[in-house]
Image (cartoon, rainbow, N blue to C red; front, side, top):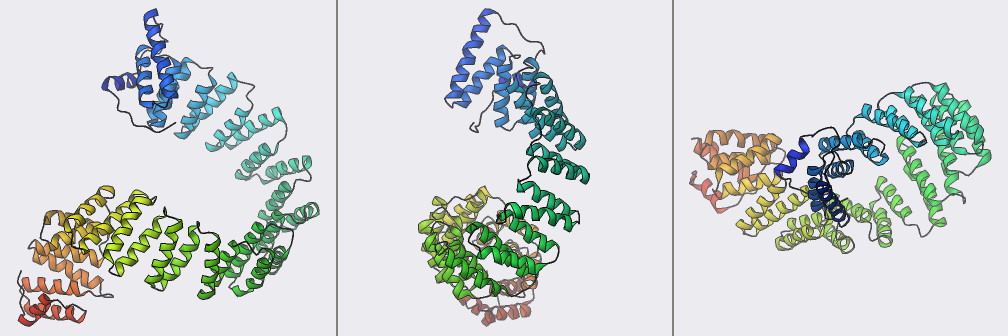
Length: 570
């Protein structure tokens, strides 16, 4: 059923919120004809997907007969979809009250009750249903689950035992009982359940492995090995057994045996490549945990390449191993092999992109993301990094188009839409279109009012333009509340205060900006700090700050004039 919006009239809401008589209504002939007409019209509208119309018609039916179980159940279903759970619950309870033996209504009610966490009510409903439908044995399993969810583990086991008496021993029931006994720390009973199923299924290796694992968890590795050996006689090449033995050797601190088991499996001709890759990944993990030389896996990869020359997932895994060995050049070759065979899989491009970003190679970033977008035009991350790289290269018009294309084509959540709109705003500001910049900042904040970079940039550019300063202060204050040590946000807030003439407060925040930005000092911040020092009657310190700004790369005509004259003019 589709999710839909429906605006209820005041009369309709009152009808639903105020429960009428608990007794079933008896309709006169005229009212019954009206009811039947509206009801069948509602069913037709629902079948055609006209859900607003259907709900309106069901409400008309409710107005005529508030005790009709069909109508109550239909409206309950609608309110469930609308996530108005309390209304839906009341309606479904009434539906079951007026038609207690209706299996469908009971299942709707128990489903919603479970969803709302009303576990005692769920248990009561299942117990009542079992009285009404004693042949619906499957309800015992649901009742057991409800008891377990409510923490009533023994009652859950009792329900499963009753189920088992009705249908006989079955793996599902046995495994459920085993799980419950284990949770109750009754290990012998848990073991007994598995022994019972093994007696009935002596060649089913699943249960033999479970029994071995139980003994292993109970610090009885010798007994565990007995069961694993039984599995080896039945299915010596079973992937489950291989993984189990690797785990056994790891748990018993026999890493050499674990590695030997993995190596044997990888070179085997019997196992599927998927299992081999899983084991190889496990082996790599062991080597990392034990700080052994990761290059030990290289011969195993070569063996797999020989066996499966067309499986490029191996190239991807091997490329990551090469990255661990800091062999970036070879890793890139294998990532490229993977990409060529899997052009619609983003992980290959993302791996190359990480390398390019670490090396700050903007041209490579642009090449990788451009290629990725030819195959994956819906992937947000490639638009973002392509636009950001072009932004850093001062290719503002191109970057602007990339972010616009991303908004149009990519599948992105609202928060990312806000980020893209913020980037577009920044780019419009760079190209001198201040009104378009502010428009896009507004759109970004409508989607995510706590987009801190947008709040900061918007406030800063408003301050530079000496425009709407109260709003600029309000936006900037949000950023420093969220990140009080961020030097960029502190600088913006200080500059907004400066433009408002609050020089003493501005000085405090600009000093904090300098203090928290000392690892990456900014010419702009020092120039602004000089301005505020001049306004607070410290011209000598102001001159020092302006000179420091020039040392940091500040080279504007205005800054030079301040240094030459030792003065500042608005």
